[in-house]
Image 1 (cartoon, rainbow, N blue to C red):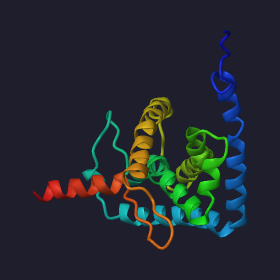
Image 2: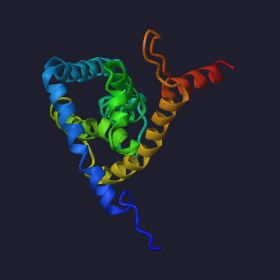
Image 3: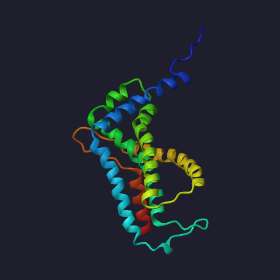
Image 4: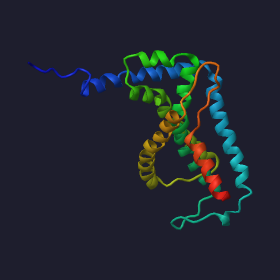
Length: 211
């Protein structure tokens, strides 16, 4: 009796699953482009946030800022470099949960689960647009910040920062999966309830500080 390898295993299956990712990107791009105000609001929110931090920086004495490697950065450099990883943090923790909730609210989650697609492809495809859009937005944001707010960056730190960010994303992605699995989303008349791990961590840290 001969044994035949299953066609659903191996590199061929992986390539077949990767071919489905552009369909998710095209769907999210068309959805975003059909709601142009949401795209405009994203940039407007980012600009307003930076402007607010700029006025806050006027209240912070430069002498109170720490020194790293003999260089004392200004307050805006702290803020700008903090906003960029926060965007990636939001993708891993809240974006996956939000996408699953949106699919469930629109009634398309069940059809997606019945399609011949692996769960990993479904999760990756749900955030592939953000994984491409957020880095592009971050680069534009860093460039504009350098021109407008006189924020300086050290090119030697780009590679180590990128490596740390790549190693940090799987951990954050795991927190998002925990938030998606610990408290499942409910459909129908029951209101949607789902806790983000970031909220849980903040609550636990606040209780720890109070004690």
